[in-house]
Image (cartoon, rainbow, N blue to C red; front, side):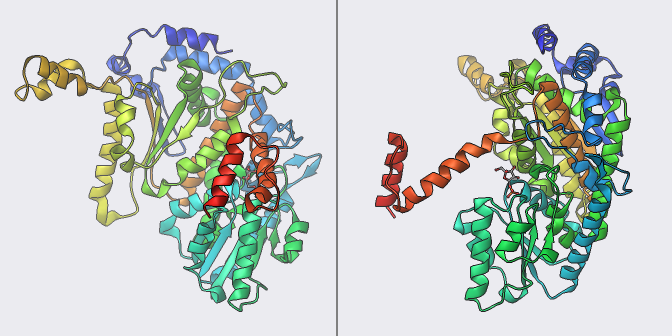
Length: 525
Ligand code: F6P
């Protein structure tokens, strides 16, 4: 499958990325501008031949046909027998989307209208604090979005409680006034143990404070019955269908906390941005298609060159949660060891995705990126403008740092330059030894995405760009990006371990390590 890529990788020899810029047209030829954003992948080893090979892979994998099948509502999530239609949630014009012959758009738009009415009601009320209780896709999206769009935040304060660690909800409730707080229980299944435990604790807190729970809870869930059993009436439940995966769900009801924070108009702008990226993904030829190129560069690094991780490095402090959001989107989607047909994958699954905002990361883990022995392809992101015109000099420095990092990764510093740095301070063998420590190998690949400003529309574009990138990589890897069976086993074992931890059940059938750990916990609490 990836033989050609591996041959091309082996054939690179000692070619350096910076030497590719002898071609004065390289930057333009290996960049793409779309929807007002510039994606520059010229600081990688991708050349015309490699790009052709990558595009040929996309053709062989039938990326275009699979994409069209997804948008058309076909059940491409084959292990769960579901369509994959988060794109319908931002289809604001309501173009028909059929699932099993039924147009889902009237329901989608009606739900959007209900979200807007609920959001307005909360925004116009005396509610000061909204607590979203959810985890994974029912937390990361809105939490990331609320931080990203802080300049547009004119609604009540929004808090996010996800962890079953009681510290999370305890610390949050300390900041809330029970009479003026609304809880959003966000859970597609309404069975997730962390969320159910936190929701019950929130209810008990209200009771303890003498405040009625009536009108204090909203549920975002596909499971109206379970929400009802918890005590949330149907008119306060916003539902969504099984064709919206948890990690792709912030465009619909799961985005309610974001809508409450920034208001329905800004939320619609967010949806419009995503929809624009959807149109681009559907309409642009593969060679000029931003999600496709982002995916192909990813495949080149992961499969061609064998780099096991990639760092996503937003030079945008408000995107601090974006790498964590992408971690779920990418790793829960493409971290699979079995191909569509049930056979073992004969190559590696999708990469480890990690990152932190710049410039903070520069003073933490960039050391390894520059001089460690493993190559980590970096994906830089930066806005041309910030939201603080009075602090323009900050933003200029931010951009300069972002560009400096990609340049440093590519150029490196050779031994001669390093000698120059220490000449005069050391001599002879000591000079050689000291210089060696100051060598940067360089030739390390990075891409840079520049967008005008992190406004709602742009955030929508960015997320949709990565969603489609994950889709394309999944198709090329021939895996199902839309199930997540890998999270099941731990959940089952935790359920069985619960009573053993409390001492209600004997520690039976457990390995020595697990039994010892339970014993130590019990003796030390
Ligand atoms: O355990 C993984 C997972 O199923 C994610 O895919 C999902 O986003 C998260 O749990 C939360 O699920 P729910 O929204 O059903 O509570």
